[in-house]
Image (tube, rainbow, N blue to C red):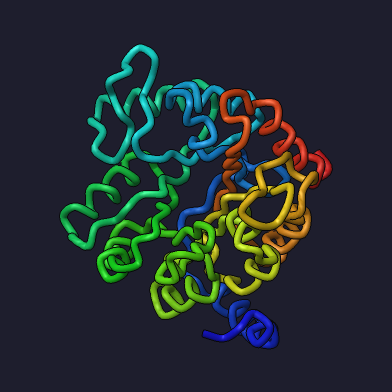
Length: 292
């Protein structure tokens, strides 16, 4: 594997090629402008509110100023139905209830994950059927072993798949998703609707420069989990945008330069019992970024 220093010289050449790729990519259905803030479709990953129900996550996302939401599997549906779990096995009745709650708060569901996509077409199809019923733009996974099944279903459903990065695992060298060059190697010869769910915070935890990582993946960024961290490394924690080391403005500048059209999820994993004020500060940062 090339070192990060050796790789830096290849970014310009890759960016030139990726720019052409971006222009010629098969475009997924765009997220309507009414769900955007400062040009970005930004809201919350429901995992931010994993101490609460799906219905409460929707309410809190709207209260923070978000206009879109990304769901994750396994969250309790509501206080009224504490035994019902929200995932791709949900009944049509449960899906209808969630869609009604979204409409009540003028939110659009845009993504789902991180979810394992089985290397079995019939089982994987359940996830894509669920995504289609909800009108999602993409699904987030780390299931690289299922890439052939994923590509087939991406083409059939016109739903994107972003490969997510968790932090580098020193004791597990077989885990490679933390490295954007590895993610690029997985997706580069695949359908253009297959790419990266760029988790900026996890790159910072891995000691990487997030703007550089975004440039590596130009033309292949399907979505992003945008996080600001108070420091690099494994001891860092989330802070409101602009207060940490992630260079959130630089990340937004880079996504804008790339013509990024996917969703950005605020996935705030600190003070999780009472994070609404900090999540709102993140939304306010993006609003001010665009002069709103």
